[in-house]
Every structure is written in structure tokens, then in C-alpha cells.
Image 1 (cartoon, helix red, strand yellow):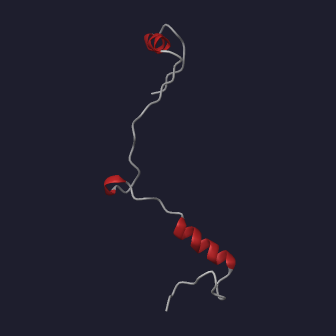
Image 2 (spheres, one colour):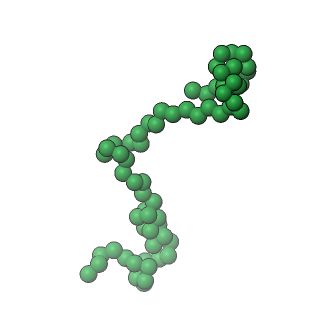
Image 3 (cartoon, helix red, strand yellow):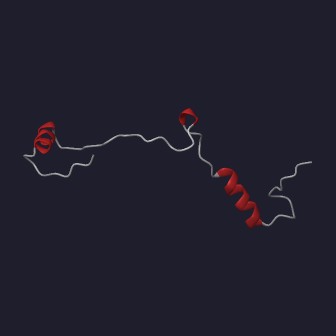
Length: 68
């Protein structure tokens, strides 16, 4: 016999069922390589209208925030 209550089991309330369902459904997928914490992806995204704008910004000829 199944020891876990189901939605149709009269001894479990709707809120208990929803809580159990949320616990079973709200899980994270395993991390790559068996890690116990999420990996750090060291990336940066810079957006500029053109290559010239990017070159000027990195050379200090143009003021635009740079996040790194």
C-alpha cells in the first residue's frame, strides 16, 4: 500500500496536499559535475552602438558606464 497521501485521500487537507506537492515539484536540477552549489559563470556583457563607440569608451575618449 502507498504510504504517501494523494489528492483523493480523505485524510489529507487541500492545503497539506498543496504544500507537499510544492515540496516535490520545487526542486533544482543537479549542478554540472556534481557540485553542491551553482557554478560561477564569469561573463560580462557590453553593448555599444558600434565598434568605434566601444573602442572610444575603453580608451577613455567617451563616457559610458562599463561594468566588469
